[in-house]
Image 1 (cartoon, rainbow over the protein chains, first blue to last red):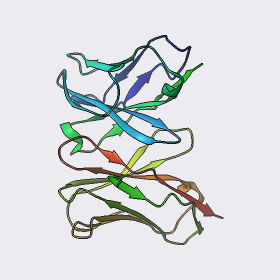
Image 2: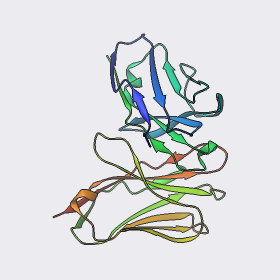
Image 3: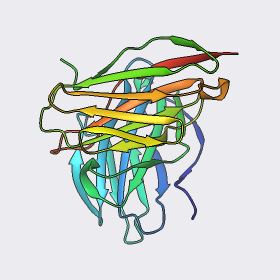
Length: 114
Length: 110
């Protein structure tokens, strides 16, 4: 069974630009959660999509948004990039919504904002 | 108070010893608990999940859950240098998604 895939793996952007990250979950999983990981803050929950609906949202500004398609693939968008948005962005797929079930992470997208 | 707390370490153990990693959580209604291993530069890898009080064993790994004390631990028996990584504790409080601890860095000394 193929694992979670994320594209691109690396991104370099400048302040003020926007970026779109993509995540394809494990086949059969309808939940996709997004996390931001930084050395100072650790892993922080951004939002979760299940069956094309946002189910949960973390404490991040509205510049961070996402969506999910009918094939469960999800995209995350960050607009008006700031230096502090530099981080490893991880998506995780699960069979169950809401974090109650096991989540499997993709390799991540490392975003650098200059 | 943070939702999930772990000792950041580093924790150093000799090869072959038992490594004990601990985690406490604040939401008494939490029902799902997970341990992830993260090698430097890689993404977290799920190694254990536990949902009820007591011990759960999987190979060299044992997860222990005590809901009354709001405490979950991970024991690694016969530690190997390849176990050197950061171990993340994750808790689902029920209402939202997972809360992660900041991780404990484990070094196994050959």
